[in-house]
Length: 319
Ligand code: 5GP
Ligand code: MN
Image (cartoon, rainbow, N blue to C red; front, side, top):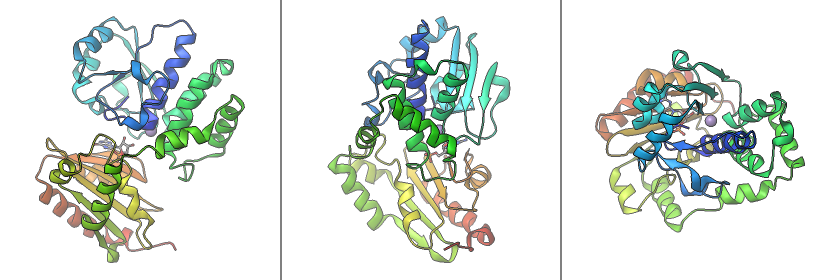
């Protein structure tokens, strides 16, 4: 999975793990970094190895591996410190992913489909299309549901196809308690996170109504003051999109070693192209991200310049 995994990255890898295990394989799930605590309820998440924390152990497993499934990312750089190890491994690398522009020469086999809602949906298709629907147990159902639910913004994004709903119906038939998964993911916040959110929305959000755009800039001092953990900034970028008139939202976070940006849009503004062009990043049409090495103020200034350059596309608003 990619670094700082989200629900889809963790759900797809653990879902695949619970499937492959039943076929008699020895399977290990490795995350390049730590992950948000709201994913710890996932069945067997305790067995996932954090590459940064247990590099030697993970390297030994990669050395032994015959097959490496790469899920929810398509360029090896998305695995950060794990990249050189993955790149030099002699194992057969298989890609299952829904992002644009895969690094095709790095994978022996794979499915890459930007039309898919989530990697979890693709793992579901993989299990079903290989004739193994009967192997879908409650563990797999919970993992895959979590990823498809989070990657579709709780079934609201345009990527939520009829087949997504059919998949969910099939998982329900397997006994999935979907309310429990929603609770485990969304009603699992610390008080600190809500105080942090209050501060961000009051003090760090700027609106540019002329451009239907909102920008949130978070200095490192806020992360320290509110003791923000991995995952506490997840989803913050979506809040401004709920404001009347806003169709493009950006967040820039000073993570110390780099400035991390996230971009979200509603409707016809392509944030994937925007992220690639200005912020060394990428993603999907309505959700993308990037990173920069420059100081926070410079990155924020660069954003405002880029926003102004895109005035023609930004100034139209649907509702
Ligand atoms: P997020 O904003 O949640 O970090 O990421 C949104 C989407 O953009 C994800 O699908 C993710 O894969 C992609 N993305 C985020 N950051 C980067 C980046 O630095 N480079 C690339 N290529 N994609 C990114
Ligand atoms: Mn995904």
